[in-house]
Amino acid sequence: MGATHHDEIERKFDVEPSTTFPDLRAADGVASVGQPAELLLEAVYYDTTGHDLAHHGITLRRRTGGADEGWHLKLPAGKDTRREFHEPLGPGDEPVPESFAARVHAAAAGQSFAPVARLTTRRREIALLDANGTPLAHVCDDSVDARALASGREQSWREWEVELAEGPEELLDAVAHLLLAAGATPSASGSKLGRALGVSFRTKRHA
Image (cartoon, rainbow, N blue to C red; front, side, top):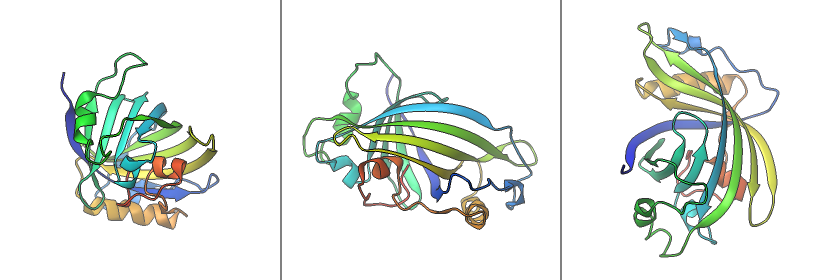
């Protein structure tokens, strides 16, 4: 089966471990919130030795856990937006999918890929629903443990992110207002990978 893709529209926020998660029913258009889903996500990120993909705002990872486990390739596609490609999992020692390697060949300057970071995310995911029970967006409360494989540097942090489902883009502003009022700040690194590696992405607000 070939790669599938969709546009991911989201915003990310840094937050202290002790910060209380807000009541998001106050956001315009949100009628109710779903029951929180507890997820454990294990991801290995791939890049060149010089982190060429990260410097281009590109994420390439193999992740287990969650409904969308598999290989993910995320490319910049505008403000708050990434085009995400997905390939199913194979054996644990499988190489980067050929279709993904071909898409980022230029950004990688033809270099090979190797694991550069390993992240474990304990996620609490909440759906924001309209009056008919349709998911408008998903908000994630993530506790992250990260290890940069070359340096061995380990970090832990907490972050919030909101991703649109069927809701309008204006909902991002409404939810962001509530998250900021609760004590969050816009993500300084723009991505989990960027924070793990200490790399500033060329395009901000990447997942």
